[in-house]
Image (cartoon, rainbow, N blue to C red; front, side, top):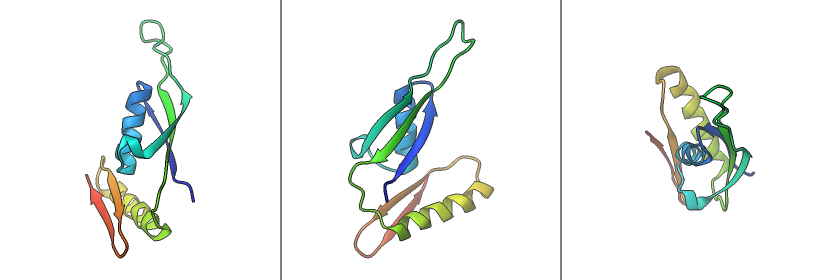
Length: 99
């Protein structure tokens, strides 16, 4: 199962950083597909955010780990306005980090 998310930001770089934070990975661990480079518009009118699709290069995350991360994000979504959940796994443990 390929892991990918789409994020927006003022620039492609901002959107990429946001995606890395959401996935809890470093920039070197992802592939970035630019969906929209965005536009500054004229005097800020008609501006569009940049949009990227980010995929993990070589992910070894289990389905159980991904489901756990999604469940925690769903629960925290009702309790905390802004947060990020990072996922790390090794052979016998799943570690979820809330930031």
